[in-house]
Length: 170
Image 1: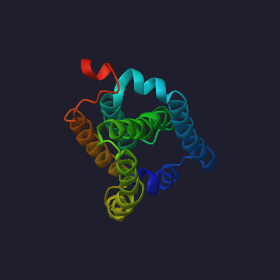
Image 2: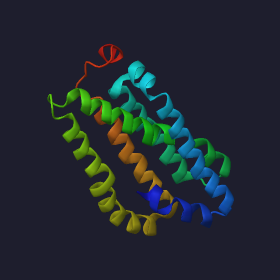
Image 3: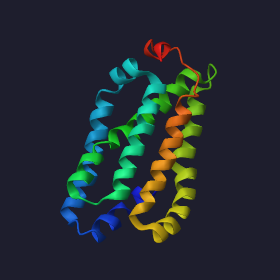
């Protein structure tokens, strides 16, 4: 939540212009849209577990870079990783839930996931993010990198799903 609550403030304090900050946000969204446009093929090729592992690894890289520099070129480079940190997480989670939920409960499981990840968790995380950003400024992104690392490690503990052949090889 450091990103959504404080990235603009952090980049502005680092001297980035308003138009550049707007372009950085747009770049992340465009990268996400491109991933979603090819989502069916990406999921078929990689499977949910690999998507979630990629998302975690990309999060470690993205948030670490944002925690260590505000160089516009570096920020622009890692903004492309929004496709992985958000897009791959969402695709991987939705497809994992769809494959792993008991018959007839997939929609409920996805609704519960959405309620927690779009409502409850961000609301609670934003409460912590304010104090964290106040204490650490841009280095608070490093905490996000640590959380992404935990997510990456946990992705390997997920059971295989039968919706892709690629997961059987992982």
